[in-house]
Image (cartoon, rainbow, N blue to C red):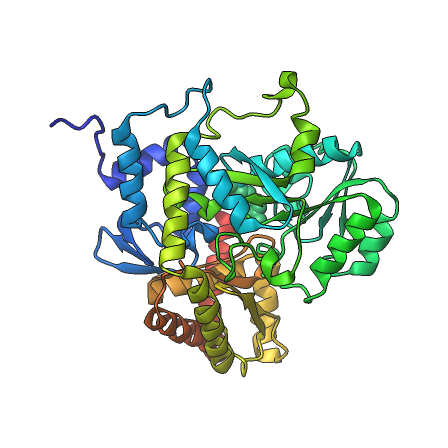
Length: 456
Ligand SMILES: Cc1ncc(COP(=O)(O)O)c(C=O)c1O
């Protein structure tokens, strides 16, 4: 049989990518010595063309909860293709979307009764912004400092770091931020009665894996109810059992009016997102026959995404990956604390389930402070990138720093990760952290890298 796709050799396809997609990204990967050619991915492992096995401790930013290329999800997608059914007619009732929505509502519980499907987390956030405004008749949007809700203009208006917004404005009007975890600040804002929705990640991911006090989310929900503001949770990273329960909301005893889900929803193989909402929110938007298609999206209920998401839920449940996330997350953080707490540049180990962060701080010792400051002066984010580069190059482990906090290393392996793989990760990060405290070569190499970064 002839293949319709001509696979070009890696070097050629990298040139194509550089020429026509994003050369800066290729340069960055080259600079960090992370431009690997991946041939096959399975579970928590990525196999490269030159024979390396890389352990994935990032999961595509919480996409691969079920592990890479889970056979049951691949089979479900193949079955759906073989069925040759109505993939995206846009003129019928897509039954699979109904089946998936029923299951998501039942798993979410609380007020959740309806679902809008979309294709990305940002699109989900856009939807929630529109629906909050329509439901309340207000325009104001409240979000938390450090938040990351996506990069489309609405979602970007709720971004907790101005870097992402620079020169893309003007953003949506009436979007204000409050410090995450501070109920008093929230009370003062909400009391103005201006806000349609409060948008929060239950555990802030890109802000640096910030886990709030146990009473914060319940307090925020109560304040929202009192002041007529919708309580919207962005569970794009924390959902799908990443933190141990289907939604992180379940561990904080809250019942949101809307929940945005994406990333791991469809098993990391096809795009999908979902906005879970109360009946009241649904009714306010789709309030007549004329408005039955008021908010839609061409690919939203496509059969492949629906089938993949159903198969993903099956895998998460049959392999009990929520319990695994809880148990292994605690094991990981305990091992990290034992190994790293004695080092001056470690300020904390935190997280929930298998979403953890290793927080670094500037060294107090003069011997380390001088190179650290010189280094930070050249480029603020580079310290973390050296850690990431060393983990990759010296230990074959893929990680990344948090997008809005360059001093926190995100640790988020697929939920199928094993204890042995966690032990290997702990040994690796222990070695890298030890080097930064004891070896001059760590800092010499780091400074060289930072200088090259400025010059590329
Ligand atoms: C918490 C959170 N919300 C929303 C988004 C946006 O999702 P997407 O990249 O699918 O648009 C992200 C992306 O990283 C995210 O981390």
